[in-house]
Image (cartoon, rainbow, N blue to C red; front, side, top):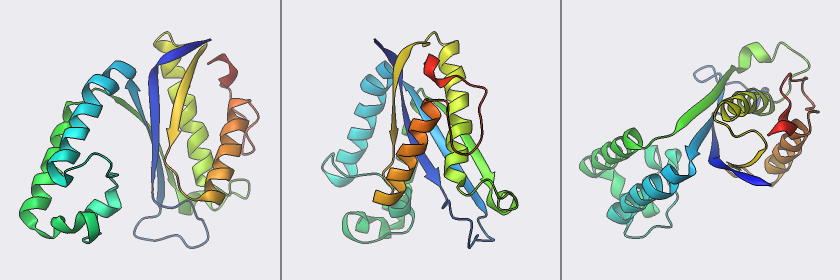
Length: 187
């Protein structure tokens, strides 16, 4: 078995609930960031580690958008300074703009999706759609038959279990939400 030259990191924006949809943010988005391993190891990691050392003095801090944007206490307390906040955001933008990676994403209008009884979880639907795009892109890069590592951000025990089950179903070509024309067992 061969490992892929690429690795994938996944994160979401918005919540996946359909019961109480926020009219100001009625979407659920899922992004797959696809890095060539050399770019990740030799470019992304050193730059992000350097940023963490510059602002926190250690490398273990988790860069989380909500904490950077909203939380002004604990290890993010220095962001109460507009100068420090602007500097950090500028450095993050500069670093991300200089790192070579690809993004595949799906955005679902939850208020539209809630009309369809078959789709109860926008995360699962977005995951399948985005996995299809990444799968096809990887094949175009000569990665067919290679094992690809996909890392999902942790969300909570119940959500993670449901996500893992649906991920395994998709990989086995039997998703619970709808059929796919993509043969995930090829890659």
